[in-house]
Length: 379
Ligand code: PMP
Ligand code: GLN
Image (cartoon, rainbow, N blue to C red):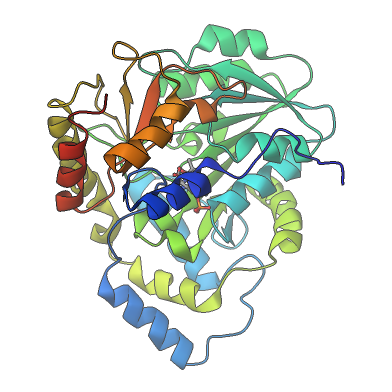
């Protein structure tokens, strides 16, 4: 069979998690919490399953759940979305991203991707016949180079994909970033897919600014969220897309043929669970403690780093120590040191190697401490 994605192999997350298991290494590679969700959430799911909420949910989501998502958005960001017509429940942000890209990208359309970029973006564009146009983020802070973005825009540009807080680099968009993007696209028919799965994980007093908090961007944006990150349930694969009604109509046309709907008991359980805002608003502090613990420990290693601004990832630089490729180093450290990480080059289309590794610090403190001990002598 001739491959539709000839340049794509098995994702690095699968590769590194398997290697970590095979080597009995601490897995700071694939991003998932090393702890469970609140037990109350288990009870709610069990309750709804035993009460018979076990058949298909409505295609766009259970009404009360969509309503709660709209209420949360209003409470946290002060922005209105109509629960019925502008909120769609999906089976993970990965689905939301794919459906949103599919809703707008036609063959030959150009899509701006800011690199390093999460690994599912480019395949979604390519499978829809779109042409990824890569713009690299500024080093070392991974801020957006707006001059480069401006010169990448052409008459064929249909979409820009944004990720804030950023995986793998932890950059958090500023109001200036939002304003500049709005200026650049206001006179063109360019849409935005905004991946905001780490919306509740920002540090040092930074506030996550959803792209829909800017009035012009709100009209153009598919905002993709995930409960996996927010409630420590990545295995549930449940998320949502917020978009104006006109965009949501097109989004749902795709969603209904990708998955049709999302697990019913999970939607009812989360609808009940999320009424209490402290259940997601505590995450900034919770993860800041972990970031601080991890960064404090990193000071005793030879790596260089700037503390992450958001997400549950910390990247580190080792180019002053070795010229080994980041991929080889990540593999070797897993095998020899017993700590798995992700080489950042995998997030560049041409595998640009800036000698950076990404660590996930969403782990129990004792696991982080153990990993930090091992990381003191990586070379
Ligand atoms: N976007 C980013 C930036 C992610 O890191 C992830 C995964 N953790 C996803 C999307 C996918 O989210 P989900 O597991 O809800 O599909
Ligand atoms: N988003 C997670 C990460 O960045 C991985 C999700 C996946 O394995 N597909 O590590």
